Length: 442
Image (tube, rainbow, N blue to C red; front, side, top):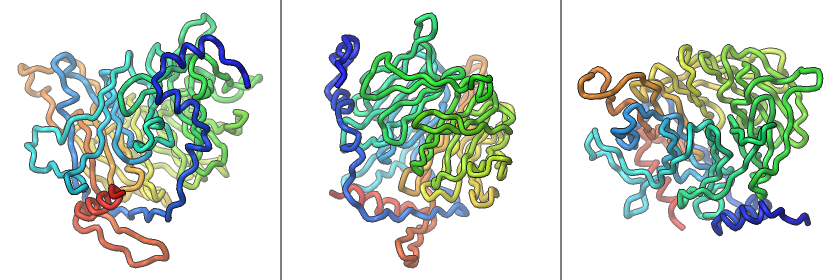
């Protein structure tokens, strides 16, 4: 076994016990899970408007930064809470709240100008956040796995402890001048052993067991200058464990690589703006891409890449914001926000619009389905120029702007062998509480 460098030893000494435990835990031990019966994914009923379960907006407004706005929201892999990112370089973690009986807490009686509840953790980063992602095997029952990674301007990649809010360790890349260079996008590989980071015309790979400045670098351009140019702005791994990695670039292209040797397989052209988000379908056969100042989410069949399968419209023609979209756990529908303040749902088999609901009074830039419950979270906001004060009443923000909302969908709880589904009711809230109560019991 290779001996650690003095720098790696110093990094380990500066980390807390949980970080060391994560780095020293064999990934096989993390991946091994007790055998469970297949979870019956709820069939969401999009023809019924979702129920607004929780709402947050006051916590994101301070006298020192009245123009603060949300930049995205992501559920944790275990579904225990969601993480928000805002323009004031702050992460907020909101854990789902339960009452004394173990059911999902009801805060509907609170005043309309009051947040549902306070954030469990607030973490401040040094500069503007470029990207962030959860550790794929994160579980609140295993504190050593409760981490997420972030990358910010002029800073290395940070690994945060989602239980204490402390910084566990950093992964640093340097340029030709031996100065720290920031990644524009990051993602954990499916095994959870490495962090892939996107830079200008290159991808650097960090072993999570070796924090510091050790990494391998791969150029996205080949010797003949063919390949993917520009800043690698987004990336996603194929969930079917086929070993494929998709990378989006501000050069309006999306590339498909092999994870093991970073071989460039092909480059997709067709996005009208710089690619800001990529995501594979649940079966790994299709890839969805979206760009800034581009009104369409494109669907690609990665088995036949000659042409686009279909396009899904969203209102994003005039914004440079990264507008996230997400695919439900069953893999049948996709949801995306836009500048019109609505979340639009699309059928992924046909690419047709299914329904929409009003989520905010400004740009909905983040939308994330819960990993197993009939819930979703949305975030909204955009940059406003000028001073917001009482002398400009038309610029005062309402509770539906620069906000985070949690929605509960009506659903049918299907079970194996096509047993008759149980209706989710008018909004699915009571059945949702029962489901959460069951999953909370030991």
